[in-house]
Length: 114
Image 1 (spheres, rainbow, N blue to C red):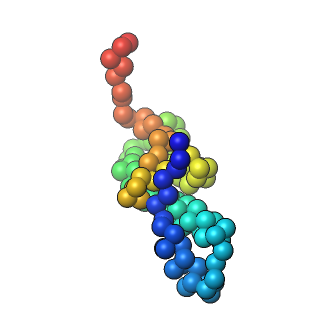
Image 2 (tube, rainbow, N blue to C red; image 1 turned 90 degrees about the horizontal axis):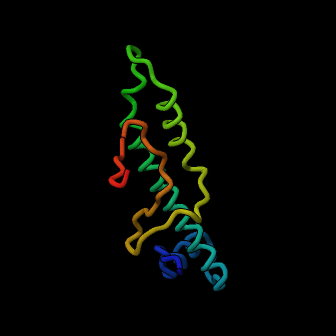
């Protein structure tokens, strides 16, 4: 299955022109598209990760004891930006498609087949 690239060739050329490359080769354009898409993926991962961490900040209040599962989940969220970006996709509109999020220890998923 071909990956959908969010960044257009025109955007890559404009970016290269702004960085001083007025005559980019096809290889430079392709590499720039990958670079810009990876920058977007990382930005969107961080944005989503930051929101998920902020939803757990109450776990760390001083009058509450945080569990090891909660600590592990928060650490896994912090580590998410170390993911191989080839496992992260963007849809045609440039929205994040990622299934590698850690499981929140407070979310119980019932198995209807159990």
